[in-house]
Length: 297
Image (tube, rainbow, N blue to C red; front, side):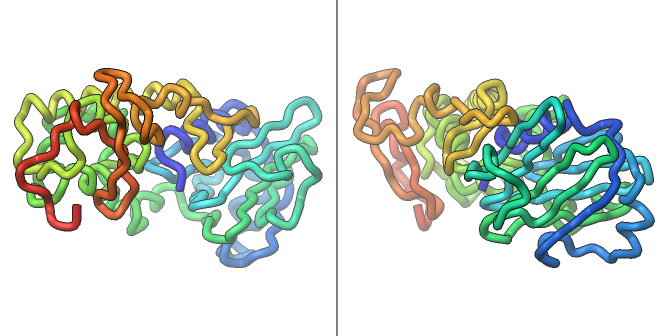
């Protein structure tokens, strides 16, 4: 599943092209991908204009002039492809639809705009969805009620991060970073990278961290996420940028998927472990294993 930088890459591409576009028609081939009443679509989507494209955690929000929003969850294989007379781009998990004819066998939802351009939601595994909701009610979805704060928001501080993480002081720090109810949008890649940067072993109990370590982890996490957005996300699972190019972050990664290679900080061979049920990359010298390992680490 894409992480925060990958979904932000999709959002920025759509925000560049969609605002001001008027929706002419909507087609779908899989009801679970577009679980909306026809009457609502006709009343609040058809003839509406896109006003803004936002992101919350790993979810896209396409806001409309009718005060309704299309809430898009890409899940594991979701992809957004825009085709216009002068510009086309794809963002998400690539397949032939980035360069081939659309709609294709993976296309679940097609949005036609009044200028003749189209937006396609492709999803090979059919786990993603596009839901229509009144904009004021979007944040009442169970997902949004539970999800933690945005780690790159102006209001997010190291103290807020520490306090939220300490709600799970008996868990290992890797598991806490991956918990979307603690922080929004952080997944396996950027958890490993930020822990390496902070010199914290992923199996370390969260409750054993000092304020100094929390400060360092906060700095490393936000730095890694910003760099990943700048690089268009990672190439994990063949994710691509809004221009159809593969994200380049993994070429800058320090530890993720670098097992058996030298640590760029100390030259110790990077190891791959299993922590919090996920493949985890560590430098055994820079990230000293704790004396007490969290259960299941």
